Image 1 (cartoon, helix red, strand yellow):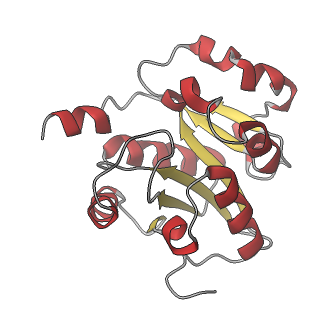
Image 2 (image 1 turned 45 degrees about the vertical axis):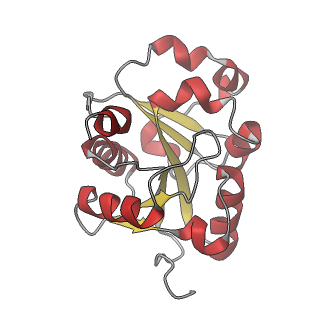
Image 3 (image 1 turned 180 degrees about the horizontal axis):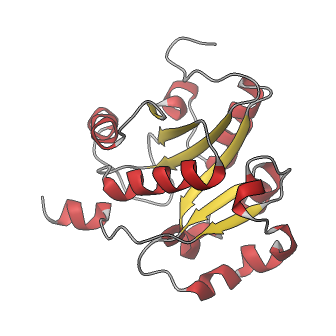
Length: 192
Protein backbone atom coordinates (compact mmCIF):
# COMPACT_ATOMS: atom_id res chain seq x y z
CA UNK A 1 0.00 0.00 0.00
CA UNK A 2 1.23 3.47 -0.81
CA UNK A 3 2.55 5.61 2.00
CA UNK A 4 -0.05 7.90 3.53
CA UNK A 5 -3.01 5.81 2.33
CA UNK A 6 -5.35 4.15 4.85
CA UNK A 7 -4.65 0.53 5.71
CA UNK A 8 -7.21 -2.16 4.82
CA UNK A 9 -7.06 -5.88 4.14
CA UNK A 10 -9.20 -8.23 2.03
CA UNK A 11 -12.36 -9.19 3.88
CA UNK A 12 -12.59 -5.93 5.82
CA UNK A 13 -15.77 -3.85 5.68
CA UNK A 14 -15.04 -0.14 5.27
CA UNK A 15 -17.46 2.77 5.16
CA UNK A 16 -16.52 5.75 2.99
CA UNK A 17 -17.77 8.99 4.54
CA UNK A 18 -16.82 11.67 2.06
CA UNK A 19 -17.30 15.38 2.39
CA UNK A 20 -15.94 18.84 2.72
CA UNK A 21 -15.90 18.68 6.55
CA UNK A 22 -15.89 22.49 6.76
CA UNK A 23 -15.78 22.06 9.71
CA UNK A 24 -16.17 18.45 10.78
CA UNK A 25 -18.51 18.02 13.75
CA UNK A 26 -20.35 15.54 15.94
CA UNK A 27 -23.01 15.03 13.24
CA UNK A 28 -20.31 13.40 11.10
CA UNK A 29 -19.18 11.29 14.07
CA UNK A 30 -22.83 10.34 14.62
CA UNK A 31 -23.14 9.07 11.01
CA UNK A 32 -19.91 7.06 11.39
CA UNK A 33 -21.02 5.57 14.72
CA UNK A 34 -24.49 4.58 13.44
CA UNK A 35 -23.04 3.07 10.25
CA UNK A 36 -20.40 1.05 12.10
CA UNK A 37 -22.96 -0.35 14.51
CA UNK A 38 -25.74 -1.12 12.03
CA UNK A 39 -23.62 -2.31 9.10
CA UNK A 40 -20.92 -4.18 11.01
CA UNK A 41 -18.11 -2.05 9.57
CA UNK A 42 -14.51 -2.51 10.65
CA UNK A 43 -13.53 1.08 9.79
CA UNK A 44 -14.99 4.33 8.54
CA UNK A 45 -12.72 6.40 6.34
CA UNK A 46 -13.44 10.12 6.56
CA UNK A 47 -12.57 11.12 2.98
CA UNK A 48 -11.87 14.86 3.21
CA UNK A 49 -12.28 16.17 -0.34
CA UNK A 50 -9.90 18.80 -1.70
CA UNK A 51 -12.93 20.61 -3.18
CA UNK A 52 -16.58 19.59 -3.29
CA UNK A 53 -17.70 20.13 -6.92
CA UNK A 54 -21.15 21.27 -5.71
CA UNK A 55 -19.84 23.91 -3.29
CA UNK A 56 -17.86 27.12 -3.46
CA UNK A 57 -14.30 27.29 -2.20
CA UNK A 58 -13.78 25.78 1.20
CA UNK A 59 -11.43 26.41 4.08
CA UNK A 60 -7.89 25.13 3.30
CA UNK A 61 -7.60 21.34 3.23
CA UNK A 62 -5.09 21.20 6.11
CA UNK A 63 -7.56 22.99 8.43
CA UNK A 64 -10.42 20.69 7.40
CA UNK A 65 -8.25 17.59 7.95
CA UNK A 66 -7.39 18.85 11.44
CA UNK A 67 -11.08 19.50 12.11
CA UNK A 68 -11.96 15.97 11.00
CA UNK A 69 -9.24 14.47 13.21
CA UNK A 70 -10.69 16.32 16.22
CA UNK A 71 -14.21 15.01 15.49
CA UNK A 72 -13.28 11.43 14.53
CA UNK A 73 -12.86 9.58 17.81
CA UNK A 74 -11.53 6.06 18.13
CA UNK A 75 -9.37 3.76 16.06
CA UNK A 76 -12.27 2.72 13.84
CA UNK A 77 -12.37 6.23 12.31
CA UNK A 78 -9.60 7.03 9.83
CA UNK A 79 -9.27 10.56 8.47
CA UNK A 80 -7.65 10.68 5.03
CA UNK A 81 -6.77 13.08 2.24
CA UNK A 82 -6.96 10.18 -0.23
CA UNK A 83 -8.68 12.26 -2.94
CA UNK A 84 -6.01 14.98 -2.80
CA UNK A 85 -3.24 12.36 -2.95
CA UNK A 86 -4.67 10.75 -6.08
CA UNK A 87 -5.99 13.97 -7.66
CA UNK A 88 -9.72 13.22 -7.51
CA UNK A 89 -12.81 15.08 -6.32
CA UNK A 90 -15.80 13.21 -7.77
CA UNK A 91 -17.30 10.37 -5.71
CA UNK A 92 -17.57 7.92 -8.60
CA UNK A 93 -13.88 8.34 -9.47
CA UNK A 94 -12.89 7.92 -5.82
CA UNK A 95 -14.99 4.75 -5.52
CA UNK A 96 -13.31 3.28 -8.61
CA UNK A 97 -9.87 4.17 -7.23
CA UNK A 98 -10.37 2.60 -3.79
CA UNK A 99 -11.85 -0.55 -5.31
CA UNK A 100 -8.85 -0.86 -7.64
CA UNK A 101 -6.28 -0.19 -4.88
CA UNK A 102 -7.95 -2.38 -2.24
CA UNK A 103 -9.11 -5.63 -3.89
CA UNK A 104 -11.18 -7.80 -1.59
CA UNK A 105 -12.21 -4.97 0.74
CA UNK A 106 -15.99 -4.51 1.04
CA UNK A 107 -16.73 -0.77 0.72
CA UNK A 108 -20.00 0.98 1.57
CA UNK A 109 -20.65 4.63 0.71
CA UNK A 110 -22.10 6.53 3.68
CA UNK A 111 -24.16 9.68 3.26
CA UNK A 112 -26.34 11.72 5.56
CA UNK A 113 -29.95 11.94 4.42
CA UNK A 114 -29.44 15.71 4.04
CA UNK A 115 -27.53 14.81 0.84
CA UNK A 116 -30.61 13.23 -0.74
CA UNK A 117 -31.82 16.54 -2.16
CA UNK A 118 -28.59 17.01 -4.13
CA UNK A 119 -27.72 13.37 -4.88
CA UNK A 120 -29.20 13.56 -8.36
CA UNK A 121 -26.74 16.37 -9.14
CA UNK A 122 -23.76 14.19 -8.24
CA UNK A 123 -21.69 13.30 -11.29
CA UNK A 124 -22.63 9.78 -12.43
CA UNK A 125 -25.04 9.21 -9.52
CA UNK A 126 -26.58 6.12 -11.15
CA UNK A 127 -23.12 4.63 -11.72
CA UNK A 128 -22.34 5.26 -8.04
CA UNK A 129 -25.37 3.21 -7.02
CA UNK A 130 -24.31 0.44 -9.41
CA UNK A 131 -20.71 0.46 -8.16
CA UNK A 132 -21.01 0.40 -4.37
CA UNK A 133 -23.61 -0.32 -1.67
CA UNK A 134 -25.00 2.92 -0.22
CA UNK A 135 -26.13 3.63 3.35
CA UNK A 136 -28.27 6.72 3.95
CA UNK A 137 -28.25 7.80 7.61
CA UNK A 138 -31.19 9.89 8.93
CA UNK A 139 -30.41 13.60 9.37
CA UNK A 140 -32.60 16.49 10.54
CA UNK A 141 -34.69 18.32 7.98
CA UNK A 142 -34.98 15.38 5.61
CA UNK A 143 -38.48 14.17 4.99
CA UNK A 144 -39.08 10.46 4.44
CA UNK A 145 -40.45 11.41 1.00
CA UNK A 146 -36.88 12.16 -0.09
CA UNK A 147 -36.44 8.40 -0.40
CA UNK A 148 -38.91 8.56 -3.26
CA UNK A 149 -36.74 10.92 -5.30
CA UNK A 150 -35.68 9.67 -8.72
CA UNK A 151 -32.45 7.92 -7.68
CA UNK A 152 -34.21 5.82 -5.08
CA UNK A 153 -37.38 5.07 -7.03
CA UNK A 154 -35.23 3.93 -9.95
CA UNK A 155 -33.35 1.60 -7.59
CA UNK A 156 -36.34 0.73 -5.37
CA UNK A 157 -35.78 -3.02 -5.79
CA UNK A 158 -32.15 -2.64 -4.63
CA UNK A 159 -33.14 -1.69 -1.06
CA UNK A 160 -31.83 -4.28 1.41
CA UNK A 161 -31.89 -4.59 5.22
CA UNK A 162 -28.97 -2.76 6.82
CA UNK A 163 -27.54 -5.92 8.38
CA UNK A 164 -26.98 -7.34 4.85
CA UNK A 165 -25.76 -4.18 3.12
CA UNK A 166 -21.99 -4.52 3.61
CA UNK A 167 -22.05 -8.01 2.07
CA UNK A 168 -24.47 -7.12 -0.74
CA UNK A 169 -23.48 -6.65 -4.37
CA UNK A 170 -24.30 -3.26 -5.85
CA UNK A 171 -26.75 -1.90 -6.59
CA UNK A 172 -27.85 -2.10 -2.96
CA UNK A 173 -28.87 0.57 -0.50
CA UNK A 174 -30.36 0.94 2.98
CA UNK A 175 -31.88 3.76 4.99
CA UNK A 176 -30.64 3.85 8.57
CA UNK A 177 -33.11 5.56 10.89
CA UNK A 178 -31.40 7.11 13.88
CA UNK A 179 -31.78 9.78 16.50
CA UNK A 180 -30.90 13.07 14.92
CA UNK A 181 -27.72 15.00 15.47
CA UNK A 182 -28.71 18.63 14.84
CA UNK A 183 -25.19 19.97 14.32
CA UNK A 184 -24.38 21.21 10.80
CA UNK A 185 -21.24 22.61 9.17
CA UNK A 186 -23.24 25.46 7.64
CA UNK A 187 -24.41 26.63 11.07
CA UNK A 188 -20.93 26.23 12.55
CA UNK A 189 -19.42 28.37 9.77
CA UNK A 190 -22.10 31.02 10.28
CA UNK A 191 -21.17 31.22 13.96
CA UNK A 192 -17.44 31.75 13.35
